[in-house]
Image (cartoon, rainbow, N blue to C red; front, top):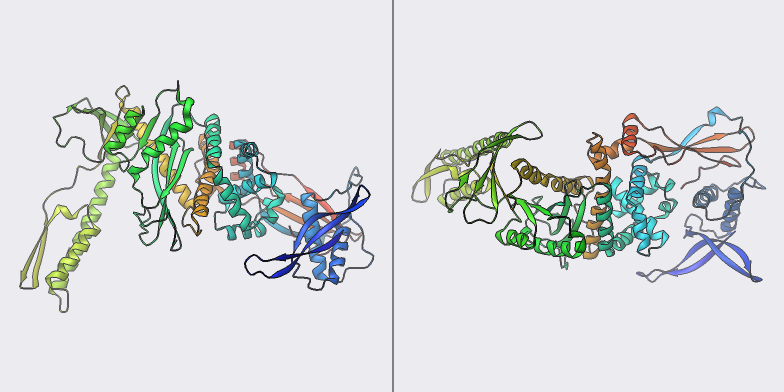
Length: 618
């Protein structure tokens, strides 16, 4: 082996510099050739090129187990040699002849020399690795003509997005310093933030093919054939100003971030939260304007698959349930369940009410439901009154009323206090801000202001009416042949998309977006959606076994399983390195058993080095 220097030019600064490669020579057809084994970078640690020959020789000695003629005296060379030798051995970059195996391996070791090194997290990574194998995403990428290196980087990207969702730079550092992912994918030790960014764009480029594959695969593994789909829209904000973007706009932020530009994400999920369709829109788009495009895309993607399976059921919230959208769903042959935008009975002929039926929610709270038939409507309405929701709404209204009255009292004290706010226009400004803060209760009060000229002398108020009937809402649906319980249960599947958005934003760090270009921003969002599919496949199977942890808790528990390298010095002057995974904790074992996964990627790896030196770095 030898080290070869290559002259390169920086694309931005146009400066020229040396990059070094570890090569080996061979003959082919009687002519000498060079093969690159490993890129060594700039070797800034060894500015003197005379040390390069020593480095290549030490790498060769370590790989093939040869004893050096003279004891190494250059600590930097020794450290780099161990580092690169371990990379070559771990990634099998050269053919190393196997040594004869002995029937037993007894060694005399120095107990005081035992050292535990390179403790890395492996549990969560191994969990996601097995989930990826279960989904078979590797086969999908192979069918798209991806190279092996690109496939591995994509799988690495999805695992780290699940386990350590952060910026690409922080993620690359975490892989090098904290994660044992290199035990599963040796390439991960050389993956940089640029590789992560590029592979996310490549995944987004094949979004339709990957999404179609996962839709079929998750349907085969987990989803029922009843075709209940929940549609909704959320948005995420940018960390920077995002100037020059075509899609990032100011809009109504779900997180109240009116100071930041947004991107919107539309999702369609099934009743178990598996993503069937996704699309990224401009940040200022209205929820109701996304449904038509979603339906067109779904029809185009499903094609013949819709035939013979009955009508799909679309569950949407009030923000999407406009009259135009509901008419569109009926025209396209979809059933739907939603909450109407306004009260369904105002201005309509008297309704016919059927007998009330009592149900119970998951917490045991009483639910009263009854059908309400309205003349002239193509669909039906279900009246729902929830005692649990009634308690919640009463409590919220009482709290808002108390705080609104406290605000009025503060205005009153300012009028009578010396130096307080007394001018009419300023008092009205304060009153306007208070009404804006409590829009749901200020209309319940009658406020009277007495003034003399431009000065307010007195303000008084009283509550003149009660709020809307608490705990009551209506469901609007095309169903006429379903019982009340079925319709109510179908509507409650909307919680799945709410849980999906919560996982995307909180556990998988969908927000904020740090990328500058639209393509990179969209690739980031889609990468998070793909990671969610992986997460949901794990959580769904755990729920079926009675384990209801959220993803952040699962990762916390799994991170207790480590991979540890132990070194021991022998009486013969050699050092034995033994790499093992720690025994899983009780909770971790329970997760493995529920999923029917293996509890560790390997049992033991062992190698022997001639003498004690710096431990090889992966």
